[in-house]
Image (tube, rainbow, N blue to C red; front, side, top):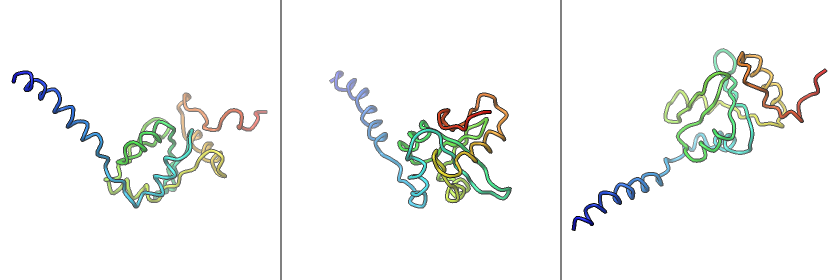
Length: 139
């Protein structure tokens, strides 16, 4: 009987943890278009969110994309020096994401956004999102 009690103490929490881990939170249907754009593709991409001062430019990559595929509760976007988590349950964050546009490498204004992002970034470790073989030649 003691073996069953000991086994129950070990196994029950593991089974409960597995069951909880398998429950995916529901995706917000209003953000379906943004989620599709955000999670597709690879490499660095930009997210442009219009606001009262103009627009904010964020950048994200494959790690953020994979995290969003696993957990639909939020999106991780980066400015030059800091990460920003947009949690879909937060009304302000959701409103911003509903207005957001994802721009990926190869799209018309990707290079322009890359230039703006770098121009506003004083961190020397942040580099261009344009692959070196696709960047315009330096004179």
